[in-house]
Image 1 (cartoon, rainbow, N blue to C red):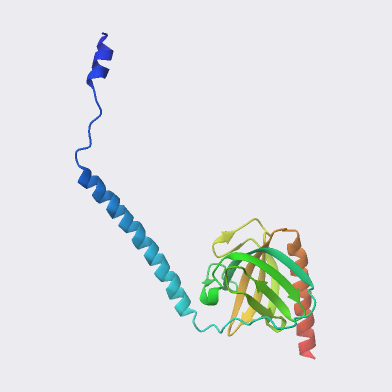
Image 2 (cartoon, one colour):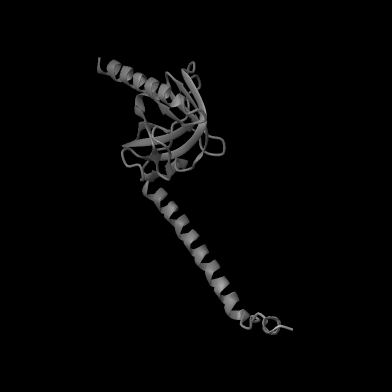
Length: 188
């Protein structure tokens, strides 16, 4: 036998002798991860408590009229207007979900399977723009339709992404035209 083979045959990997230390480290790591998740959950609940002054979300009217536009896609959340990282979590507005949007003369109806639906009356719409991000979601430039609306005493931005991104421009233009007409009629 060659000297290298005899050395290799004589060496064995060391056996683990301190199982209790390894198990202790694993339990400690699991407790740390659980603590971090619990703190995140408590922070989310606290944010909802701080935003408790927001009124209930309006429901869609019985007969909103014919649809001007409709879109399917994703709802990415709502924030305080102009502060794209200040997520609104009260009344389920912080929950991401699939969404079906329908724009009528009465307003914007947002139907969200698995989350609370809401309706934005036309009189509360303030503007629409294309943007690249909203709390926790960043896309390419113009990849997000952001609708600004008044709810109670606050202005909110809600972010939507269509399954067909080419629809965003038409939605922003139509919403802004509708808002301008509503403001002009209100000024008379």
